Image 1: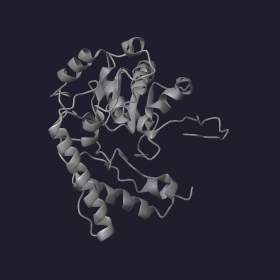
Image 2 (image 1 turned 180 degrees about the vertical axis):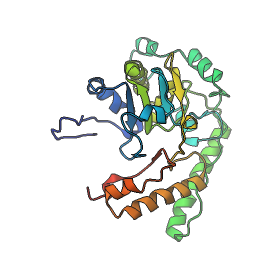
Image 3 (image 1 turned 120 degrees about the horizontal axis):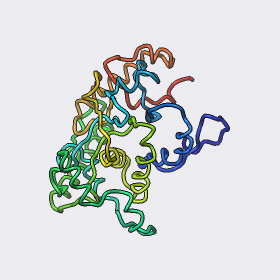
Length: 288
């Protein structure tokens, strides 16, 4: 729990910026290592997991079969016009930031060329330039002038960034791939290897939803399960470039929260079973 000041024995205090929330994993690694089990399921504090999952069923329900398999919903090539946030973040960090001995630190991850080769071999880096940007256009609201003023500002912001990437040929700071990272499952035996890569990405100040999926792709000898390997649908509101999906998932989550009447037990009882999870669900809205 970020900035926790209590004394509960099963809570680990962490700190940092949510844009790099993989630092929470790094800070609590020693505590995590002491846990029993074969796999580690890591989820965000505003993600409501399908209640059909438990400590026994989780690997098979996530499509994990074997001690070297990891899970993430999916992976997005940031050189394609699919998700602007990933494209923008792919050149905002530095692999030689001031204050670190880059030569010794960076040897803990594949070289630029090796990482590029790996992602290209998996069709996750079609282009070396980050100029293919498609605007996300928020839908006009029926909520009046104030609501549509926010929509207008959002559309203008995306238009400006679209032209910025068209006029200047941005390149990767380091080969990366994007993926939603509020749910990830890794074998406990790969925790140290996973963290070693994330430690370097932290020094580079890499955005979390580039860092976690890229670390998974660069872990040697691992196989990756994705949402396509499960029987479930994604319940994530923040779907790339799709305002209709955004609106539909907001309605699903809003309806579930409203029908629960502030009771967590009713929230779980009414969970739509076709979804792997719903995100975001703010538990601060509930009485307990």
